[in-house]
Image (cartoon, rainbow, N blue to C red; front, side, top):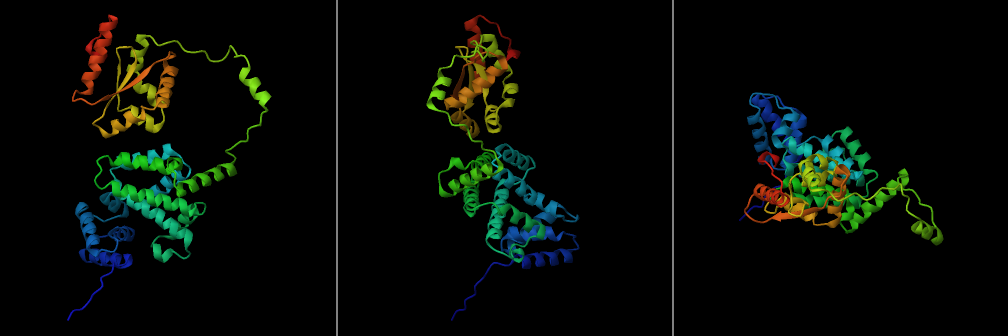
Length: 365
């Protein structure tokens, strides 16, 4: 004969009460909010909850366990961070969203745990949007629940489901990834820019964003011109006061642009600036400004691919030209050899100097 026992996940409240009893018997003071977080992370497993609690008590030996201390040990962040990030994504503010990611990384938070928690945050928002009386089910304060309700009010269900899908894919990719920060930044940009995807949920998000902009008056209606008026504007003589073409950059100007490159790219957009900062800047034999990227490095390989786009090169050339008031030609090179970038840089400068009869000291580069 045999007997069947069905083991089910333990409720969050039961795990929290058990942890509280253990802390009381050990004489350790702990915030209930922190125990609740450990119970949620354990996801129904008492063994995991005890392991996490043991990790926290070992890190803060003979000290009271606060909610913030538990978050720091487990590499998690407070709900306020999720609210800020969601607001940046909802407003399609890429710069603010990437800045929040940078703050999380600089604080030493665990990226995968952050992604998991943020996924749960949006999942809770989806539940709040579809059901009433969720206080007992979600195990959260009334204030947090009201914030979720307010955020979910104007968000279509399809958009929230897209966020959960994209974040779930990211969580799976982070298991064995070496560049976790880059993956998170790319995903955040993808969430801010639904045009990067062509699925149904992305289309809904784009339409919702357009409706919100129309309601806020961000879109203006241009006056309709007749074909005659349009032709007249196209054939109108050029105003001599308009901006004149810049002269070709001299070798000295190109070299100066290479020296001041880090200062020049401060005006570049956030992600473009980060990629440009990884490049080794030099001068080619033809007097062009050369960017060298190590293709064996994942981030630099991505940067190299980005600047294969002629439009990106044109934007960079315009940015440099605005600073030196001369037209500079920019070329991109990928370093696939074992030769260090520094050697390529030195060789290129030396060759350029020899060709132009210029003597350059070592400290010049």
